Image (cartoon, rainbow, N blue to C red; front, side, top):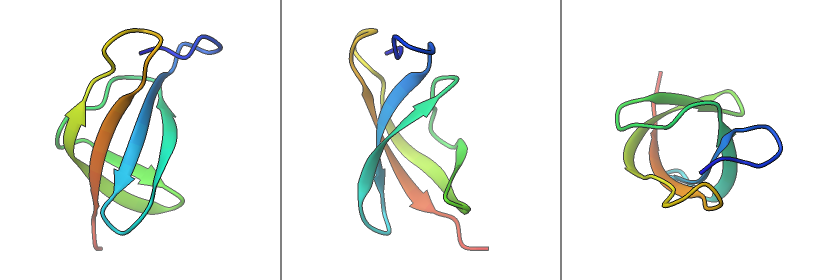
Length: 66
């Protein structure tokens, strides 16, 4: 769950507009949370939390159209 270097949580983010990538977060993600990636806003739709501190979680996010 925590990145050994800086204590950050790691998530493999699955973007609805294409692609995925590993991101770190200072706090756990939850459904409904807004995240930003490269200036684009997304809302978390589904989360699988990391099973332990050495693993990473998954988050599925949908782009928020302004």
